[in-house]
Amino acid sequence: MVRRNDERRAALVDAAIEVLAREGARGLTFRAVDTEAGVPAGTASNYFTNRDALLTQAGARVYERLQPDEETIARQRASAPDRDTYVELMRELVGRVSGFRTGYLALLELRLEATRRPDLSAVLTERVRADVEANVAYHEESGLPGDATAVRLLYLAFNWLIVEQLTLPGVFSEAERDALVAAAVERVVLP
Image (cartoon, rainbow, N blue to C red; front, side, top):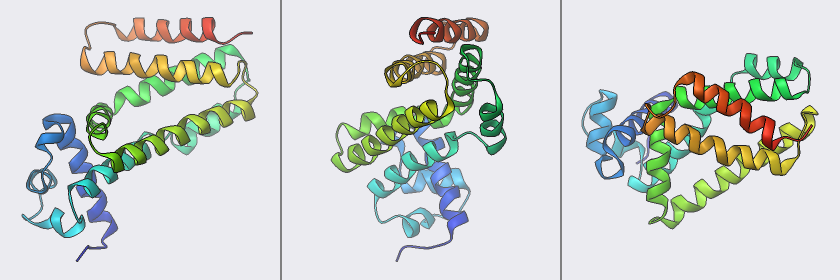
């Protein structure tokens, strides 16, 4: 029987994200999730029908937690639609994603696991495609300079910058990261 306590389920999925980031996909077991969440043994297995369900929900939860808060969205919408605003928007994005280190590392683990699990691959592909298209739509609605191709190119560039920062943090300082974000916007987004 699958349990319906939404708060407990979210805590278990958050624990799964931490386990994925620390132990990798091979270390993700119901027992490890129970331990991380500080709940009795067997709790996770009462909430998830199998490991694939846990992996899939962990992937969805990472994206949910990466969304900007309402205050950030309002501030961005109130800003002038120019390249300076675009640079600040991208700096905020890279900083927010980099700030959720375990979530992004868990997502990298999930992406690798998706190469072996077609259902997980389908879920992540759908989610990433929707995320990219939402970014393109937001960009077009905002009146910011550049086009859909610029949004996609920056998405790809910044994803790798984030991977670099989270896996090898000594490569670029925060100041260098901010300068690279500005340079990417300046070179990819035509005036």
